[in-house]
Structures are given as structure tokens and as C-alpha cells.
Length: 141
Image (tube, rainbow, N blue to C red; front, side, top):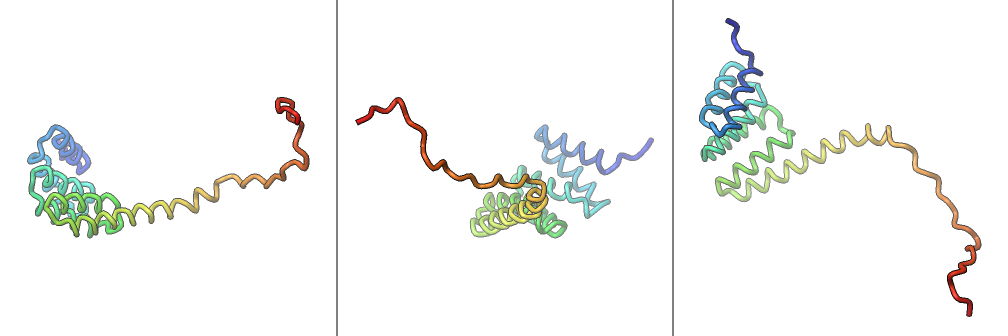
């Protein structure tokens, strides 16, 4: 019998999470992180599972571990903002909300040059006609 891969274990944890078994999901995610402390998706999901269990201090701690793995990841800061808000720390929630927005902007800017290079050239400016055509529907004075 072969051992399940981290991806299979993660899929099982996410299935448990989707079924509302946050305790089971957290246990599976912790097992993955015991073997692979750099498994970003498991780290991120563990914070959310703890939040759903009402363990906001634990969710914040796990969220900061995910932040150490990917400090500029938008979802990390979005989650931390939620965790701090649920814990009643509005200032920290706003801080991480702003960091999430900055991360989104950085991602957008990183993708913009590639999009601009493939964009078609703007159409040349056109001149308006010198004389407008007669408008037969208008009554002449």
C-alpha cells in the first residue's frame, strides 16, 4: 500500500473543510505541515480552519506563518485582516486589509507590461469634417 501524497492529504483536508468538519480538516493540515512546514496551501488553509472553529488567536498565529512563507501574497493579508477583525483588533485588521490591497496592485502592475505589449496600437486621431451636411429634418427659418 502506498502512502498518500501531500496533495492527496490536502485534498482530503479540503473535503473535510467543505463538509464543515473544521476539526478534521485542521488535524489533516497539521499532519501535512509536520512533514512539510513549507506547504503554503496547507498553512493558509489551517488558519482558515481555526478561524471557523473560533480559535482566532490560533488563526492569527497560523496566518503569520503563511505570511513568512509568502509575504506579498494577497490572500495571506486578506485572511489575516479577517482573523484580526473577528478577534476584535480593528487596527491590525485595517493594516492587513491595506497590505492585501497593495499586494493586489503589485500583481496588477507586474501583469500590466505584458498586457500593454500585446495591446493593439491606438487608432490615429481623426479630424472633424469642415462643413456639416444639411439636416433636412430641421425647419429653416
